[in-house]
Length: 381
Image (tube, rainbow, N blue to C red; front, side, top):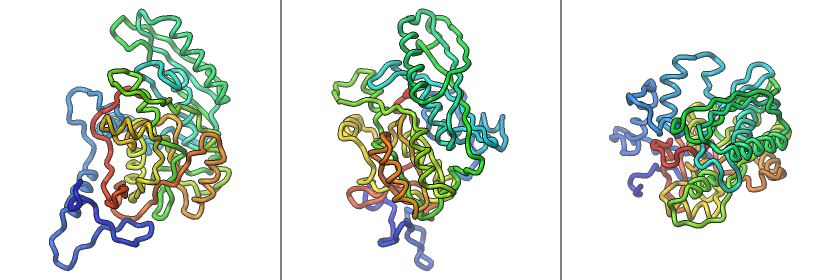
């Protein structure tokens, strides 16, 4: 985006990104016109316009959100579902479900098995819950090697032991050869939560701090390279890990309402999560590019492949929005845990422009970080 196109931010505005106001009867600037079009588009009811499902509908971006709101939310609407969070909380019970279709099934640092366990544990953790029990359903393709299935289940068992949860029920189906991609796993999880805890994507307030628990983009880039087809060598592994211990430490350090929201940055990456928070809370999220931790190898691969690390999936990283007065304590709490040693404050919540994520670049400009539209990296979880 050129200098003339970038979002102008008033200098010395503290934590607020303030759009340049109209001067008297001056015609709206190009920036103001763009922001107005974005706002009008977001106010329209979500509507799937395609007649057939595409891969983009599962990528975690705009197409996914539209599909969920227009089809699933419209059919199943109820108060527990409407927040479209990582899980549902009813009293002291937290519940979540997820499906895993990663390709390849085995990749540096993990496989579909531990990914399924950790991902479900993390969805419960983002609700502030203590995970307890999981279910696991397997869809297996005819001809799938039994040795691979044993390897996957062993990985799941090890991940469950490490997370302190038990797989207590499940199901198995086998489909004809060519009707699946080897192995798909669907998991559900339940856990207990303090009913007084109020974590929500709609709870962010101007002045709040935005933290990430460690370097972003590891998982997405690792899986992409594991597929082959790129003459790129990088010493990278997936960041898949259970985050409930990390969230528990954060919530113990910052009790009450000082932690507004927790989200794990999976499909669509950090950018998508922050857009969801900004829209749900009616605020802006202003990131500082130099403060977002990205491993040099991930950054280099992303530059070669034309991918923004902010959209690359993580499987062991979370975003936390906390009260500004709790930012230092929250950062210390995260860094005191083995999974949070690379934590950083990456931005602030501002009042304007509502519903948008802005990035203050290393070159001194500011650009809009929108929700992912296409599907650059299918089947990463």
